[in-house]
Image 1 (cartoon, rainbow, N blue to C red):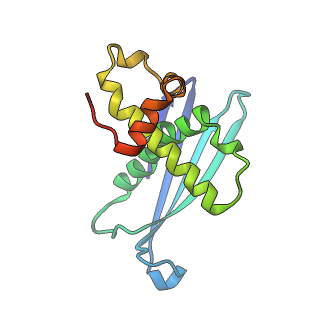
Image 2 (cartoon, rainbow, N blue to C red):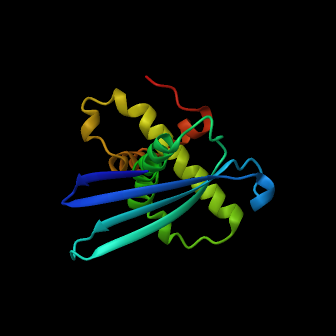
Length: 158
């Protein structure tokens, strides 16, 4: 299957191939299909670029066809752009020096909790579109008692 998108000053062509498999064939429990997504585009330097990605899917071929798989693969980037972008830009998570798995998991949980609280209280702001995660962090730093109360008692919307 092939799709063509235009945007951000470039043309992007995506091709998707899917192949039914069994979990025993690749040693991956629940595997039903193997997909290959190929993206062709011209980058900023106007030279053609190619990216190939593979994925294992648990949905049966009877449940989902190539068009739906292509949409799911494309929709995966909304997670990257929404959650991971916040983590990378606001918390600079990619450069975190913690290498201990338990410490990294704890910090990731605290970051997730911070984003959750920010998203829960954001609609209560006078101008929610102007209230950002960095501003929220700054407010919580200034009002430590409020942040501690939220941790100890749980967040309750006003």
